[in-house]
Length: 304
Ligand SMILES: N[C@@H](CCC(=O)N[C@@H](CS)C(=O)NCC(=O)O)C(=O)O
Image 1 (spheres, helix red, strand yellow):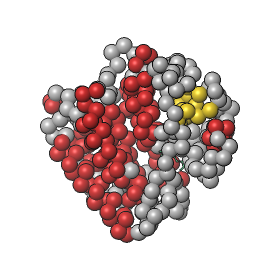
Image 2 (cartoon, helix red, strand yellow):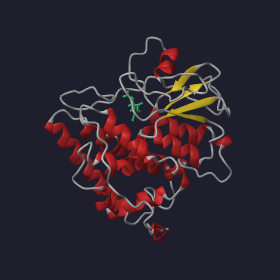
Image 3 (cartoon, rainbow, N blue to C red):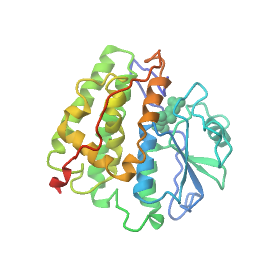
């Protein structure tokens, strides 16, 4: 199982346990200092994927180091192949239990470890990207984009809430549903939002128009996984991504940027999903397809 608590056959995601914030002024005890924090991710995990994209877009690679876990997870949780160079941990659970010995939830990525206090600061995934965007500005690369512009925040937040509920988490609600009606409800809501986004992206290059923002970073990890895992493994099969001309070209447009394609690992993605959820794929066989041409010209620049 994943982080599932079925309620009436519905998948309910666990609340995030560690919610401290790293801030530019260090007010809460966690100042944004280069080299101090370590980010733990899985290339398979869409929530972790977005943190890698933002770290890359903002040029924070030398400011925050990353440890990548093995894509296959068993009942012990995420494993660090060869051990973590920073903490020596072999399993992510060690970091959670070092922070709170009574922790009983699931050990999730993404999370951030503070090397000074020797504890996890946060596994609060919706806030990790905005924290990198707003609290680490002094360390952004020159010319880094403003992914969360103040004037667009209300619209970004509103769209993100819908995308989170029906798309990012929607595919999980479909895939982990344990009742027919729960599954159908999730799939219907998912494709209603995808249809809406297809329309929205017919006149706009990115979700907010001419500029790349946090909203694109949140949508991409689900779209890039869609045909390879969610369509089959999670039964989100009313349509494929490639059946949506605008969404498919939009995803290829983003994929053409190094921050997106260098953090997209289809081998980790496919092996993780098909081999880590034996309750929905008991043979753990990883399908060979689909074959997708991510380099097909996207022609989205015509919308600039
Ligand atoms: N922290 C968030 C999102 C992160 C998340 O769900 N991560 C998944 C991978 S995509 C995970 O680490 N799961 C570990 C597990 O279920 O054992 C949550 O608890 O809902």
